[in-house]
Length: 124
DNA sequence: TGTATGACCCTGA
DNA sequence: CTCAGGGCCATAC
Image (cartoon, rainbow, N blue to C red):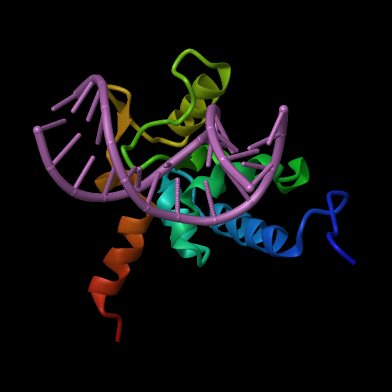
């Protein structure tokens, strides 16, 4: 058999996409992760660029909190004039995330920073 | 087979 | 701060 084309997408991609969905689903309200962090936490540091695509493939029934994923600059990666951009901003603000001049302070709202803090605590 | 594009990231000017 | 260049992986044409 040569190739197994398109009807069912390739398994590796599917599996990785599911890992992404899981990571994104673990982000608590009021916090955000960057695409690079999601890629890293899902086991593929170099797949930052695929994260967006994976979320695009995500089925609606997952109710994936895609709005909690932003770029490393702390900004929304949709065009500022797009409806998607506005939707994402509204949802985040509804969870208490503050936009300062169009940007989010990752030191304050970044979930990765929260995870790091837990390690500092050195629980006994 | 090669080029262009994408919900990206990092560094340097 | 903005802009440009290089790197990254997969998809579309």
